[in-house]
Image (cartoon, rainbow, N blue to C red):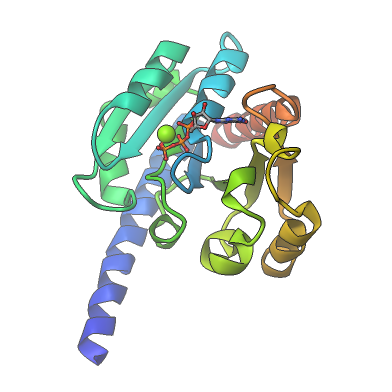
Length: 223
Ligand SMILES: Nc1nc2c(ncn2[C@@H]2O[C@H](COP(=O)(O)OP(=O)(O)OP(=O)(O)O)[C@@H](O)[C@H]2O)c(=O)[nH]1
Ligand SMILES: [Mg+2]
């Protein structure tokens, strides 16, 4: 047993070192990096499409899309107007820093302000692997149920931005917002939260304001 623990620690240690290198590359170029995590279908790509379209002409934006298979999401991000790189993990349930390092090599970072990484849809594995991004962003969605913070505490504890998506479905599904927020508050008190609908656009202006302010901060840091 102790040997197995050591192996896991080594893997995570190696990942952390590469994540630090990725962060240094983003910082040197003044690019804000966001790691977007959520369960499958919560709305990661929908949020990216909306963000790309809304910020066109204001921020130079690229997307790294992680999926087990297909380039469907990178195709959607590119159709919305972003430079997009697809990573196929071939079965892995999360992105890691070495995968992102490879994708960074395909991008001209000096021509970017914002990099959004769409992680593989999963509420467990992505939480353990730092990528080198500046913020970890979790999308919860109303149809998943209000119990998810209680059932996936590692993910909810580790993020610094939370979006509650699909609020347009609140009248149709059982979702106790107070219970959900209480679970979040226990794990991650005061986490910055945006309630949004990628379908109707409700709540998205506040998210876009935050993204722009954070990107401006990143540029100041590089100057
Ligand atoms: N009603 C409603 N549907 C939404 C909303 N946002 C996304 N959807 C729908 O939810 C489905 C999944 O959205 P995606 O953006 O592909 O989700 P994802 O998290 O990228 O999914 P994976 O990459 O497969 O994990 C699509 O049918 C979207 O149209 C929303 O705010 N309201
Ligand atoms: Mg997607």
